[in-house]
Picture 1 (cartoon, rainbow, N blue to C red):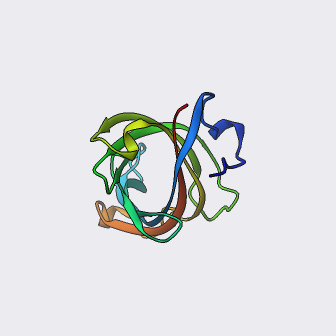
Picture 2: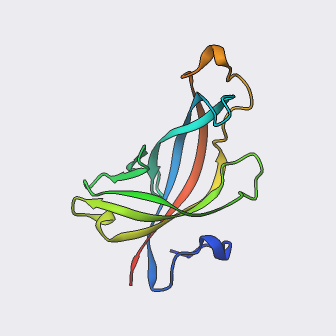
Length: 152
């Protein structure tokens, strides 16, 4: 596995090694809510995606939390550490996430950092959110690559 060439901002900390790459295909789910100033705006609710290996086999799922669950039962949740704009302006940002919780024994039990890169799509809708349809949900299809890192 080759470590991707990305912005310094979203590189994993020194002392970590790449242990898994998964290709995600699914949705970013947004909900229409009142913003800080009371104006209706689309807000990210959760991702909903399957994770695949290079052969196209399902490795697990990615869902709200944000959480990644491997088919071996191991599971991680993470929080945002850094983000940079995608080179594709029509795609969600590239991220570096720090794992905050582990459960189960398996592939994800050692993971401490996650990168989301090579994103396609996934942005919030640009219209359709108004005071008449607060709490309406919208699914925006996306793909991305998730790189999982553990301590060396």
